[in-house]
Image (cartoon, rainbow, N blue to C red; front, top):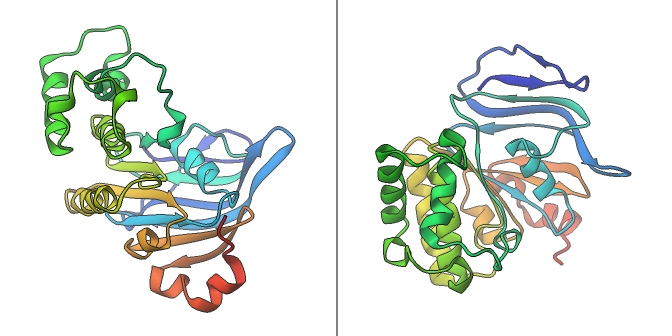
Length: 247
């Protein structure tokens, strides 16, 4: 996909740049009567893990939604390179426990973009679902209800749904929040493996340890970009003292 969204809402061509998976310039976004992001300009490197860092309310989730295509920018330019739409994994709390879905049904939803929600899955679809469930270590949970899982198990099921889309861009919103140390470490290891396999990973987090483990980070503060670059360059004591106020 190679699209640039302008303020007019019309797509236009953009030059190819294989160094970056996403570029955005003077990007603004928000909701009716409530602007959230204000003129952000940055680039997301390809084949790397990028952390969107900042306290609650800084605009991380909104920016992730814009990158995923579920929130339309109100101004600026957004350019994706890549052959497939991004795979978006929302926060665990955004997926209702009341939905009567098994783990396998949850993962199979990742194939709907290819097949549609009402068409039967093909043999290849089922093989893809099997493969990502094995990779996430949840094959033995296939018949369990999603709402009955532990936090770590549920997060792995949601990431498996994202992987089932077979995208080269995986967007995750707070993938390790509320998980125990072992589950956080397991997710972190998986993200590193995905990058080695050719996937660009972007995740929103307010966990500084998770951010420091990324290859790059964007530091947000009140909907504005307060810093970008390698975590060691951005998340310095002086910068955090100025901009970071944990919730």
